Image 1 (cartoon, one colour):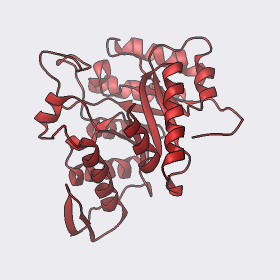
Image 2 (cartoon, one colour):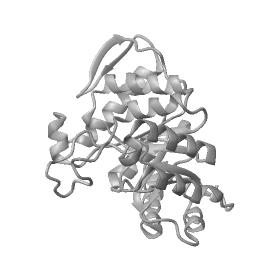
Image 3 (spheres, helix red, strand yellow):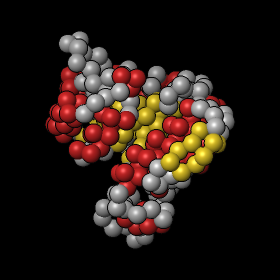
Image 4 (tube, helix red, strand yellow):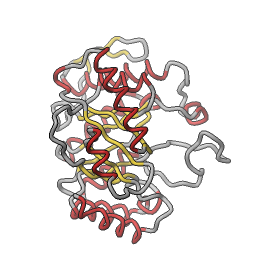
Length: 287
């Protein structure tokens, strides 16, 4: 988390590259390429493997919503772009088999030349967790262990891991990621999510947050930084936020004053491809 007095403008990113109009293959590439050409720092997926049908709270989307698998969508985008970073916003980690996910993400990072931003969370939607054969209980502990096991596979050969949920002995997975340490971002607004970000990740991601809720989030992150040890190799805690509304006058500066490093703008899944392209151009001058 940046503490210097100088205020830098947040990087600008785009959410939903695999959803709504962007889920159509040619639109996905047009939108990603337009964002790259306009100077956006990254594009981000959304993720739900399945959705309750009919929709019921707390499900965030209708069951007919298209969400292309995160690793597939980002690999597809990677092949058609050169510099823009590729964010998962977010992979619900306990729903995934860790060795298989480690292989997918390492392959994506390898093929993209190290452009992956691995956003992860623990999940909250019980019907989805059940469909993925994942208990809702202890999903946080499972996520922490999965991340540790994946990092072991990314970091060496003939590695072993002996955890409560994951065990393997003397195995190797290649290719390794292009990044020496895949850039990892923890999503979530709870105390435990803030602690997880401080202890285990390069950054934290808050979704649909206004300036006031972001200020409270950052205060919580500072408290967790005081209470828990942060590994030096993770560097300063990076703050990413998807605003709850379109940026209004002064919003960019307000988020910057709070110390937000990246704003991941959401044009909305109801927009047409042309409307999303216009949205990208609307915010390009702010870069």
